[in-house]
Length: 313
Ligand SMILES: Nc1ncnc2c1ncn2[C@@H]1O[C@H](COP(=O)(O)OP(=O)(O)OP(=O)(O)O)[C@@H](O)[C@H]1O
Ligand SMILES: [Mg+2]
Image 1 (cartoon, rainbow, N blue to C red):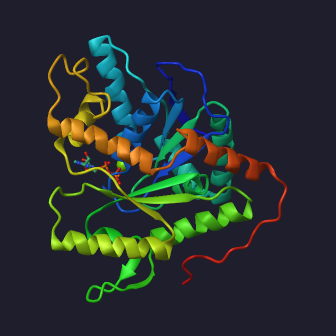
Image 2: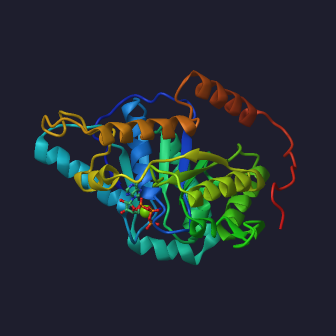
């Protein structure tokens, strides 16, 4: 498959014996997928894991550009910071893969199997619209992170909501593709897809509208089968650090040339840490136990268990 590879800067040994795939996905553009991907990647790197980042968005290339800025920062300052091995889907190849779904799925599964041998975590950033390759990536996700902004407009991709009563009237397009990815994993006897919907760009003061958004999300989480967690707040630091190739996590007095970090910066850092904790990844004793149970379960010969869809249309 046609990926451009940028080598990892700080080599470290592998820590997990079973690679964990995280997909950042939402067919709604600008919801915070790439921002989440870069922060989670740096968070896991700083915990000592071997991380690969994969950019399937050949138009925006946000994760790739961020990676380039990060390397440029290192060249400029002569300092080294933890950096993921990065794979970028080549633009010319994207159309090729869109033309043939079964070929795309097979080729992507194969390349992912190779990467699984090398990395503890693979973080895949997907474009803000439907593509076949993005669908193939969703099927491979152990954890799917879907950032949404605090707005009913953002829920449109999850469910059709009655504007007057806020009743959920049906499954919307993106939630239907997550359901299909779950069905696919079930037929393949693969592990459960843990779907987390994150509230991104939360406002610091909660308004009546946000409380309604919150209630609606809770309701949706039970109907669509996702876990619902707080993501990061709306902060300048999350936007600014992109061009520096840094994140709130690796901006320290050393990386900022001795400048003291602001309160907002320190809070931002804690928000990212809480977000990673909320993802329940195999990064601590509890998470590792969960992963070991999952691995045992996956290695057993067993019939595919048929469970009904959480949300049937
Ligand atoms: N918590 C935040 N605080 C401030 N700005 C944010 C935050 N999250 C995202 N942004 C900004 O919002 C814009 C969209 O974010 P991002 O690129 O991560 O979304 P995306 O879902 O990857 O978009 P696309 O669908 O176009 O790929 C960017 O300019 C980003 O810097
Ligand atoms: Mg993006």
